[in-house]
Amino acid sequence: MRSALLLRAKRAFARLAVFLLATLPAVPLTAHAQAAFPLPDLKLMAGGGNVLAIARQTDGRILIGGDFARVSGEPRQGLARLLADGTLDATWNPGTDGIVRAIAVAGSTIYVGGDFATLGGAPRANVGAVSDTGTVTAWNPGANSTVFALAVDGTDVVAGGQFSQLGGENRARLARITSAGAVTAWAPEPDGVVNALVQGPSAMIVGGQFSTIGGATRRGVALVDAAGLATTWNAGLNGNVSSIARDGDTAWIAGSFGAPRAGLAGISLTTGAALAFDAQIAGSANAVAASGGEVYLGGSYFEAGGTRATASAPSTGRAARSPRGTRTRATPAKATRSRSPAPTCWSAAHSSGSATRPP
Image (tube, rainbow, N blue to C red; front, top):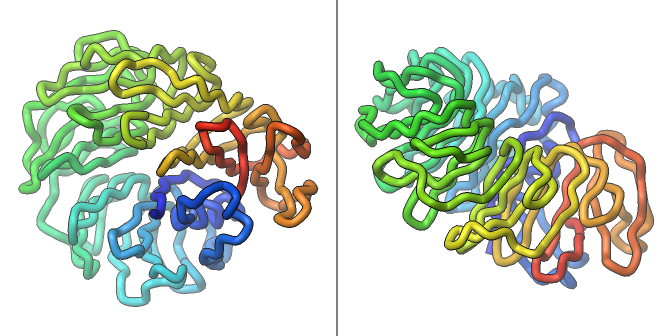
């Protein structure tokens, strides 16, 4: 089983780590040291820019979006696709004139959101869609400001961000759009920016920088039903949410908050109760992915799992500094330490609370 990851990276190491975690097999912790997976050199620094969104297609190809201008030395304006082996897809190049911040996939259609005025050479205000071949589709709702998050829900697409209008309708920061590009009556109206969207079992999981949504007080995260109302589910956060991942009945929530857990919380989608697992994040958790009982976290933090963030050597576990960032390996018995404040990537099996890293 492979886990899909959406990671917002701001430095070269984080960009590579994003791809590694997006393609990492969900294998037992004891097998991580032997696991092999692609380590592509995207050469994004050569053209400048960052990767801000990632989505995985069912055949293993990886879509990346951001504010970059070149990938692996080839022109790619904010949007590119990598093959399953990590090499650039030379046949797919729709391009934008701005920044891509969100990608969602539904079959052969790829939905794109961000800050842009054109997509694939056609006018598209901050949100649009392209086909699997890279041709822009007729889907064109248009938003009057940034789209930070997209999620497919049945035949609809849910968009979140900081816009106040979408598809010509007044929609405060959150809206539902049909496959024909029409905005529905669904209007939860959060009072702050929406950063994350994940389809829940019977409602949309919404995360961001809000205190009210769907007619209820919900700090940072809420379940919003088909009527646009917040359900009784309440995670009890006291801060903002940057990213959400779902693994079965658990919503893994990352952000800047101290309760019910610091930086990363596993919340039951049935009861709203926090799992006992406590990653003890000291810093900012910006991206999370989860699959098969394992959790992968990216961000800028000093400590995770009770240990300082480190870059550990695979064979010895001894600390080794990375010039652009760090990754953490820790066990309950012993932890290596580093004082690096650079972007970090961390993983853990939440049943045991132990932390590890890809090789």
